[in-house]
Image (tube, rainbow, N blue to C red; front, side, top):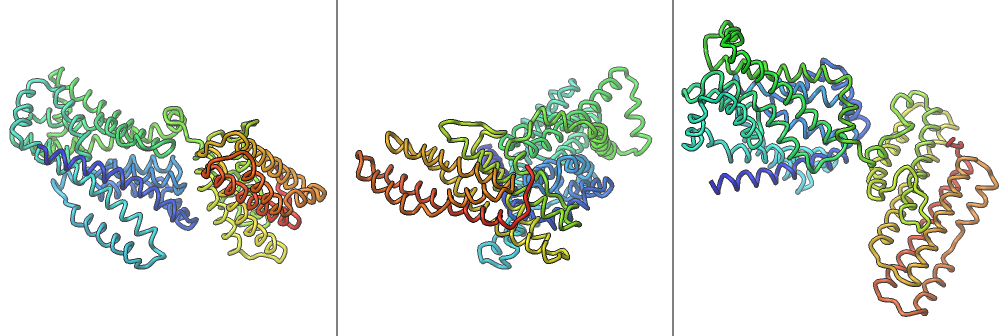
Length: 534
């Protein structure tokens, strides 16, 4: 028993590591080309459904499909609505195992982990490192689930389990509860289906009890999803919640029908299955398939309005809102002249978000739409590559001379905005983690307020396009190296401060100089670039 528990805990650890790795690696490879490919695959309801069925058949766990899709959503590669359709259809694919009775993916999983791990460590095909990293993480996810299954695989053969099943023979509902409990630990509904067939074939369970054991997978999926998705937030967790809801509906509905049918001594449902096949095991397998199809049908009924419910159950995080582009979109690339204007507006939005990031540590805080510095920085880290990729896509279009100059200006400005946001994030991190006191605190506050004034001036100059405001911004961001050096010397010669605080002040003034230089470079691009409306 101790060894089985160790297998389960090791599998659980690898599972969480794989989920986190999938999200991180997909974020690195979230190019527009990949997005377009996934949009074509999942945008068509028929193709999306077939993709889900195939994914469920290969993985033999709709939970695995749901967690992989949550990684795709977190990186913006697939919208929530399309992911919900795919994960719903994946439930049908899991019925393959119940009909085949067994399938062993361990060898394939080990090959995936081994080959991709070697490719990463020996730097083979470096350009594909993100792909290898994603496959390696998916392999860990599968391997973790496989270890969890191994931990409880001997369960049906254990004398204690058999004795418990025999004890519960006269209580039909107990089979439903047992199925829910088993599904929480054995992360595969199809594996529970195989267990049900085994128990029925050995005479431990009646046909009805075997079917109710399968129905118990529905509540089990919901409970397991709540636990395994505890590290997720926002839209990625919505997929797991949705998977739990549709499984709960299908499992409880099918169990209710079976119990009512049994209570009325009618036997109509079982008679329908008997009309299809004379084999009890095949009838249990057909019930499993019917349960998964009902799960899919429940999803189709819920899809038109479930997103609003999911938003209330698991609201999108601030970082998700921030990371979604407000202006740029693929269709705009067909008209490069419009695309450049939209890219400029998205860049202005990035500057506005950077100002809000700085506001988080100002003494005289003026809260914007967002007030969480960590969420702001995380969201902007995901937004910045979106803008850069969009601008790079414009270059691939046929451009006239004027539009080409605008695109080059946008590329240059984006590099400066990226660097500015990183520098502001570092300045804020220093502000939050260093316990400045006395003169140090006063100096940091003055630097923060000065930087806020400069960024707001840059925003006004950008929106208005006024030459006077741009010149004033150029004046405000002129070289301040000599002034910063005097501030450092004066601070060192003043009241005694700790070495850590002195080092922090030196770093803060160096960051301030860099941010001034970056704003000045942005100001220069405003002199030649088209104005972005607020």
